[in-house]
Length: 307
Image 1 (cartoon, one colour):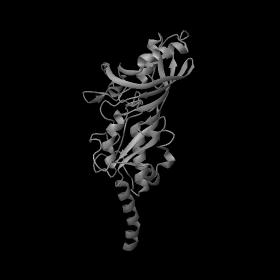
Image 2: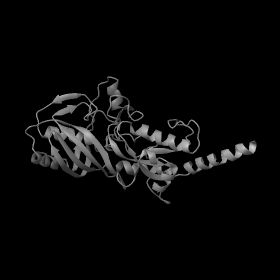
Image 3: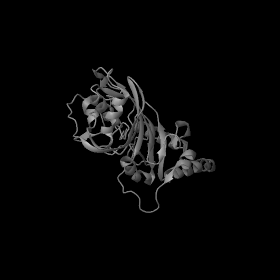
Image 4: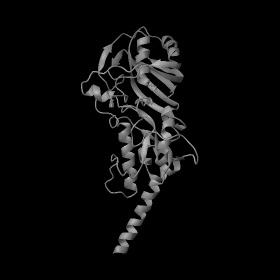
């Protein structure tokens, strides 16, 4: 009987060891709805169960059996590429936070919300009949290159150790963070069918798509908010070629997709682990954008993200 127990346990130990030996980066697809932290915890739970761990608790901080983190929060209402670091790969996530990202954003003219996206409450309505495609393309030029941007109030940014989004949810008065330098490498208008318009955005770390769309609406003597947001690329990982969908969240698929850590050197430690974005990391998208823009707690709490 003892022999039978031993034979059963051996494969489980082997699977867990193989899982714990993973070191590197890979990308998964985050769907609309759950927070980035929830998606990461679900991934960990699925992999641990496959390895034979009974009743895994992916949120447990101490004695973690699987070290894992993500490289930049996406809002709960956003979808797309979520880069995951496992093992020593979590040390490489700071590179993902600061690196280039691409997004496709659908904006809606004429309505502004408190969260700057469709999850929020409409706080302002303005006429948009005067806005033309040429007007918008002209205004977009001012948002390209090295610019200054004020982050959204509903974000993963913190004050006195608390996320601004959580403070707002509790009814506290929150002042906007000061404008900070961000970089937009490419910004194009793909579709214009008022009130909707679609933007392709390539930006650096710390940039908020929600703030971009809000500022663009104001620049057009109207208002606007993000209706849909998808991160299509982060670093070398693209939506079409590299993301693992939920049915592919298996050890076999992770092993195939894993980009190993450099054998020597590599980015310094400090990338976020265990599902927590680095402080100041936006959540939309990204990076774009961090605490989900819902009025509930975000990323454990709550992209672009950065959005």
